[in-house]
Length: 218
Image (cartoon, rainbow, N blue to C red; front, side, top):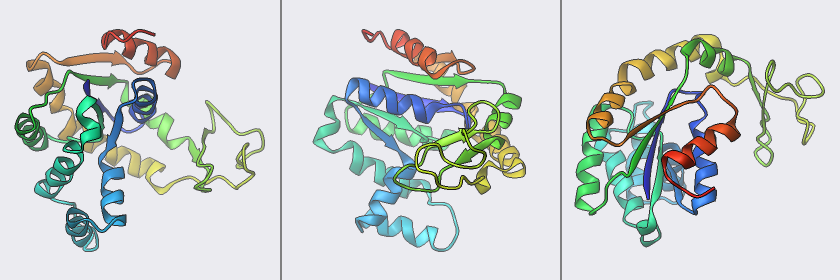
């Protein structure tokens, strides 16, 4: 099974990808994770990507596609995968289509995590994160506050308000999503693989709905 998740920052797609990966024993491919791994391992594509990142510019699409070609060609992925955070725009989606065709693969489903943007902004701006990499738990000042203010319940580390969770950055990220990534909804709807779910619910209920649309036994 090959599944792609769409959703604005804060929609919960990362959480659901991890749950589905564990349930179906499928590789969870995040563009960010793949980039970091390629750079850490000094692979040829990782070195290319790092040269752009060191200049403070976006990694170009051909390099990203090369990175995904390496990942998708691994024997372990023959049984399927879950894509998270890629493609981000129509150009990348078209390039991914060509790559999957070359590899004799196709997307079985594209799950769009739909949610009101005003609610997303509240979710993101209120997040507080544990900077301890071993712990890395996330809290929310309104929806999931820590027992002791600004202190992680699990390891006692002082929580931080990440720079990309601050209101001005969140607004910019959501605008970028609307402009660049939302058009993918129509792109995949036309292909007949789009499944739209209401992401304004508990993670447990959303996961059950995902299993239903994928026709996976609970």
